[in-house]
Image (cartoon, rainbow, N blue to C red):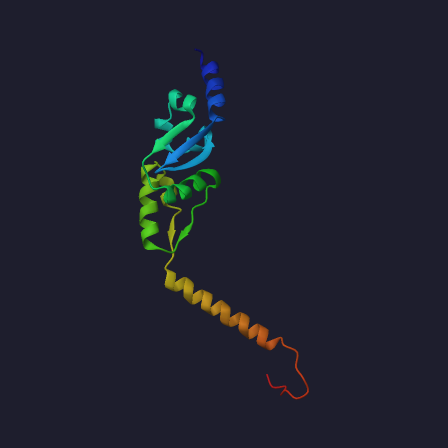
Length: 140
Protein backbone atom coordinates (compact mmCIF):
# COMPACT_ATOMS: atom_id res chain seq x y z
CA UNK A 1 0.00 0.00 0.00
CA UNK A 2 1.38 3.41 -0.95
CA UNK A 3 1.94 6.23 1.52
CA UNK A 4 -1.01 8.20 0.04
CA UNK A 5 -3.30 5.16 0.43
CA UNK A 6 -2.20 4.79 4.06
CA UNK A 7 -2.96 8.47 4.74
CA UNK A 8 -6.43 8.15 3.18
CA UNK A 9 -7.12 4.95 5.14
CA UNK A 10 -5.94 6.68 8.34
CA UNK A 11 -8.28 9.65 7.83
CA UNK A 12 -11.20 7.26 7.26
CA UNK A 13 -10.37 5.46 10.52
CA UNK A 14 -10.10 8.75 12.44
CA UNK A 15 -13.78 9.53 11.82
CA UNK A 16 -14.99 6.15 13.10
CA UNK A 17 -17.16 6.37 16.21
CA UNK A 18 -15.97 4.14 19.01
CA UNK A 19 -17.33 3.02 22.38
CA UNK A 20 -14.81 3.32 25.17
CA UNK A 21 -15.80 1.16 28.14
CA UNK A 22 -14.00 2.57 31.16
CA UNK A 23 -14.60 0.60 34.31
CA UNK A 24 -18.09 -0.40 33.14
CA UNK A 25 -19.22 3.06 31.98
CA UNK A 26 -19.41 3.49 28.22
CA UNK A 27 -18.27 6.72 26.58
CA UNK A 28 -18.87 7.47 22.89
CA UNK A 29 -16.31 9.40 20.86
CA UNK A 30 -14.23 9.14 17.69
CA UNK A 31 -10.89 7.48 17.04
CA UNK A 32 -9.47 10.92 16.16
CA UNK A 33 -10.38 12.27 19.61
CA UNK A 34 -8.80 9.30 21.38
CA UNK A 35 -5.59 9.51 19.38
CA UNK A 36 -4.76 12.77 21.14
CA UNK A 37 -3.39 10.43 23.81
CA UNK A 38 -0.27 8.34 23.29
CA UNK A 39 -1.98 5.54 25.23
CA UNK A 40 -4.76 5.25 22.67
CA UNK A 41 -2.44 5.98 19.76
CA UNK A 42 -0.45 2.88 20.77
CA UNK A 43 -3.42 0.66 21.67
CA UNK A 44 -6.03 1.32 19.01
CA UNK A 45 -5.58 -1.34 16.37
CA UNK A 46 -7.45 -2.10 13.19
CA UNK A 47 -9.31 -4.84 15.05
CA UNK A 48 -10.51 -2.39 17.71
CA UNK A 49 -11.55 0.12 15.05
CA UNK A 50 -13.50 -2.58 13.24
CA UNK A 51 -15.24 -3.65 16.48
CA UNK A 52 -15.77 0.02 17.44
CA UNK A 53 -15.15 -0.92 21.07
CA UNK A 54 -12.29 -0.72 23.54
CA UNK A 55 -12.18 -1.55 27.25
CA UNK A 56 -9.94 0.40 29.61
CA UNK A 57 -9.67 -0.74 33.22
CA UNK A 58 -9.54 2.73 34.81
CA UNK A 59 -11.79 4.99 36.90
CA UNK A 60 -14.72 6.23 34.77
CA UNK A 61 -15.24 9.32 36.96
CA UNK A 62 -11.70 10.48 36.19
CA UNK A 63 -11.90 9.44 32.54
CA UNK A 64 -14.73 11.93 32.09
CA UNK A 65 -12.20 14.70 32.81
CA UNK A 66 -9.69 13.10 30.43
CA UNK A 67 -12.22 12.87 27.58
CA UNK A 68 -13.27 16.48 28.17
CA UNK A 69 -9.61 17.46 27.90
CA UNK A 70 -9.30 15.55 24.60
CA UNK A 71 -12.29 17.44 23.23
CA UNK A 72 -11.71 20.94 24.57
CA UNK A 73 -8.17 21.16 25.91
CA UNK A 74 -9.56 22.27 29.28
CA UNK A 75 -8.91 20.68 32.66
CA UNK A 76 -10.80 21.53 35.87
CA UNK A 77 -9.45 23.52 38.77
CA UNK A 78 -9.22 20.93 41.52
CA UNK A 79 -10.54 21.99 44.90
CA UNK A 80 -9.93 18.55 46.33
CA UNK A 81 -6.36 17.34 46.90
CA UNK A 82 -7.36 13.72 46.24
CA UNK A 83 -8.96 14.62 42.89
CA UNK A 84 -5.88 16.62 41.97
CA UNK A 85 -3.48 13.75 42.76
CA UNK A 86 -5.56 11.01 41.11
CA UNK A 87 -6.24 13.08 38.00
CA UNK A 88 -2.52 13.78 37.73
CA UNK A 89 -1.89 10.02 37.76
CA UNK A 90 -4.54 9.46 35.08
CA UNK A 91 -2.93 12.10 32.87
CA UNK A 92 0.36 10.22 33.17
CA UNK A 93 -1.32 6.89 32.42
CA UNK A 94 -2.90 8.22 29.23
CA UNK A 95 0.39 9.81 28.14
CA UNK A 96 -0.69 13.42 28.62
CA UNK A 97 2.41 14.77 30.34
CA UNK A 98 1.94 18.26 28.89
CA UNK A 99 -1.55 18.41 30.36
CA UNK A 100 -0.14 17.87 33.85
CA UNK A 101 1.27 21.40 33.67
CA UNK A 102 -2.25 22.76 33.12
CA UNK A 103 -3.76 21.02 36.14
CA UNK A 104 -4.21 23.32 39.13
CA UNK A 105 -4.95 22.66 42.76
CA UNK A 106 -6.88 25.44 44.47
CA UNK A 107 -7.26 25.22 48.22
CA UNK A 108 -10.92 25.00 49.18
CA UNK A 109 -10.59 27.29 52.20
CA UNK A 110 -9.28 30.08 49.95
CA UNK A 111 -12.26 29.63 47.61
CA UNK A 112 -14.64 29.67 50.56
CA UNK A 113 -13.04 32.89 51.84
CA UNK A 114 -13.47 34.53 48.44
CA UNK A 115 -17.08 33.32 48.14
CA UNK A 116 -17.87 34.74 51.59
CA UNK A 117 -16.28 38.06 50.66
CA UNK A 118 -18.33 38.28 47.43
CA UNK A 119 -21.51 37.44 49.35
CA UNK A 120 -20.78 40.26 51.82
CA UNK A 121 -20.17 42.68 48.96
CA UNK A 122 -23.50 41.74 47.33
CA UNK A 123 -25.36 42.20 50.59
CA UNK A 124 -23.79 45.63 51.06
CA UNK A 125 -24.74 46.63 47.54
CA UNK A 126 -28.35 45.56 48.02
CA UNK A 127 -28.50 47.30 51.38
CA UNK A 128 -27.20 50.55 49.89
CA UNK A 129 -29.46 50.44 46.85
CA UNK A 130 -32.77 50.03 48.69
CA UNK A 131 -35.16 52.96 48.28
CA UNK A 132 -35.32 55.19 51.33
CA UNK A 133 -38.45 56.48 52.97
CA UNK A 134 -38.90 59.85 54.72
CA UNK A 135 -38.64 58.21 58.09
CA UNK A 136 -35.19 56.74 57.39
CA UNK A 137 -32.04 58.60 58.21
CA UNK A 138 -30.06 59.85 55.25
CA UNK A 139 -26.66 59.08 56.74
CA UNK A 140 -24.11 57.30 54.65
